[in-house]
Image (cartoon, rainbow, N blue to C red; front, side, top):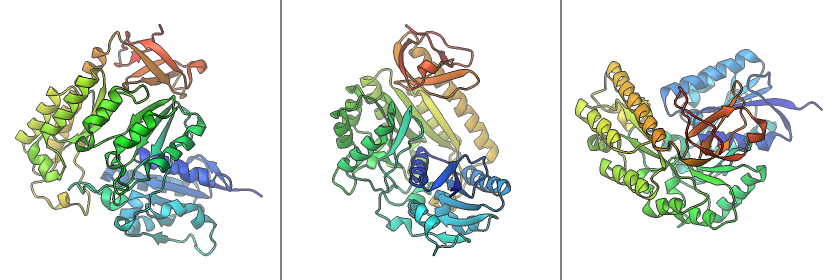
Length: 430
């Protein structure tokens, strides 16, 4: 009997990708998994709602799927499904909209004949959910993302994530270790611990992220581990000390700043001030001088005057940040910030974004040059990109070389001594 064909497309965060991978594995026995660009009987769009652009992309992929096969059933899951279910259900071709809890029952919806795929919407109050659904990505043998936490209790004034993902929740340490070992059956060379707010791991279980990292550290794992984005107020000295003394945790931190102005941070309802962020960055560098520190920043938040913007620019200029991810403020319906007065002119926002992007390039160049001449270990990835391949050092510096099959998923020791015209290090074996 011919199997029905099903295709997935994932938008947004690494957490979404890990969950899509889990859903796909759950279906691969009974369905033929095909590429989203192929003709399929079902198209599943795993949506993101963090910005207006993310929602626009979701609608675009739905329309592409419908054009590809007008007879196919399109199923939308994820954060936009949670927040914009009625809007999505009206798009031609959409037959099923599942929220961030119901999406884990996708197989049952497809196989249960009592549920008709016909503009069916199943949206629950995610804020009441206490269920944690573990998952991990499994198609890439270089790197796997293991979901260790979901949801967020911070309710920042600009953010829809608590309304889309629910309250913070996670498995126990022992259950999480089982998931990590399951993910390692695919023989990845690197595991990234991911979630919405991973610093909150263990909340409700009387456990902590630090305790989980200790358990991983004393295990028999002989691969790389990285932490995904972690809030500055939850990035404790013991966590930094553990990474500094570890052979398996990589010296790589992603810390959301959002603003360097205490006034803006207060209006954003963030849980720290600029001094705490500065302290975290400097403490990391005191323990790990060559650590990579990436930061996120939002500019154009309502009421952000020139002085507050300059406070952000000045703080970033002073700090040894390696990479800067810059986002223009995106007003999200239903958030507290959407009702704030003193909206910033789009032209001013674009100008501020441009200056911060330039500063980010300066920071990146400084970081790369600080590492010039160092011997590092790089994990090469499998992608053949126009005859080239690349990989990352332990401190997340990208290195590029001509594609060589013998280097795929291998760790090689190199000297960082050749930067090309695109500011990328070239492979220089010892």
